[in-house]
Image (tube, rainbow, N blue to C red):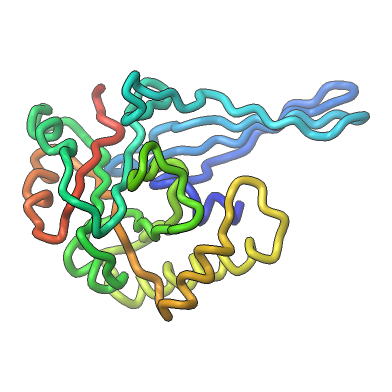
Length: 238
């Protein structure tokens, strides 16, 4: 559960179901994305528990890549990418966003030109739902400088409308989960380098955000001068 709190852009644990047989049980955890208030099922993780063997984890609906390895998909939907701050300007998904119908509901990942504090981020992007905190030593990249959103580190912004006090609680919760995971046997994440980076900087620095909404709502956002890279994820209807 702590893994889910710090790992995977805009991915939230939803529910678990378990089915039993005489000598085994299968547990299924469901993970969803919040697409402008719409809970969109992203993937199911199944674990098979057997009496006489160790548990086996099965990932349904795994990520697939495009032919050029620069775009990934899950369930036929686009997986957002992030782009490391400080890198040169590159082609992104602005034209794709502009080509969509104005009433399409879209998940959009924004990567900043430079890292900024959480409070600065909220002032510039008051509708942000999830904040990316770059892990320089453990992010999983498609190609150098790109980070696959499903393997990015960060935290959910639970109530952006409540301002800095609520955001401060989100940041503290993020740091708490990182600290807990750093003392545990980790399954999928490597949080120690990230925790050490935050401690070295003295604060959580945000490298990007996830924002969702209609195309009409998102187009004005991409004009912000702090943005270096735009990546389109889930599109409803697709």
